[in-house]
Image 1 (cartoon, rainbow, N blue to C red):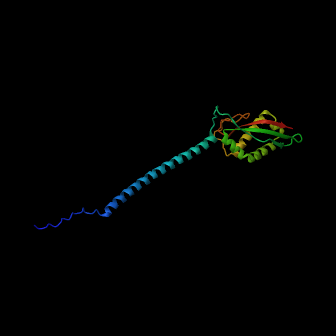
Image 2: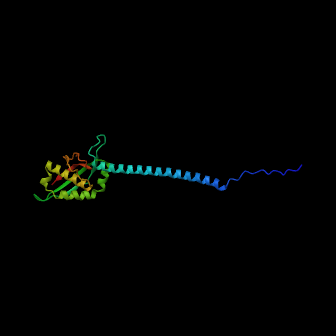
Image 3: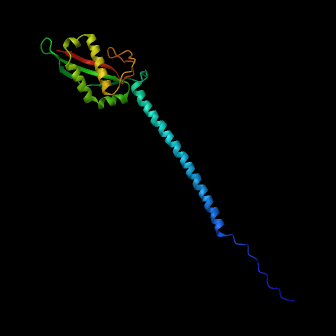
Length: 193
């Protein structure tokens, strides 16, 4: 018998290395694309949320200056002003006016804003007061008008403009309903000599 030549075991055909690596690359690329897509959607949602928050802050700022209603459950916010002493316009000799006033504002934020602008507010109010005569400020109506003028000055300094349809204005320092940041002016001391 003839010796049979040992049969060589046939090795399985080698898988080309390129196909195996190609599958890995495709899977990695698909995972990367999926991660980037999720990150992009997340970024878009976050930007929309920030945009809505910014719009909400702008609306809140507008509401702060334009809101006309007071919350009866919150205590009022007052900003005290330093005393004003001015020489009045001469009528019967030299006279002066000493006034201490307190502003009622819509909220704490506006109160802080008034404090920032206080030098300009004081300048404008001093100019107003020094242009008055004693006879203009000693009557109840004169004091009401003066309180309204001071309120208008402060609101103007804050950049507020009244609505086109002018609603009831402030009388005796009471809160107006026109949505102004400063709603009233109260005199805590008023001396004419």
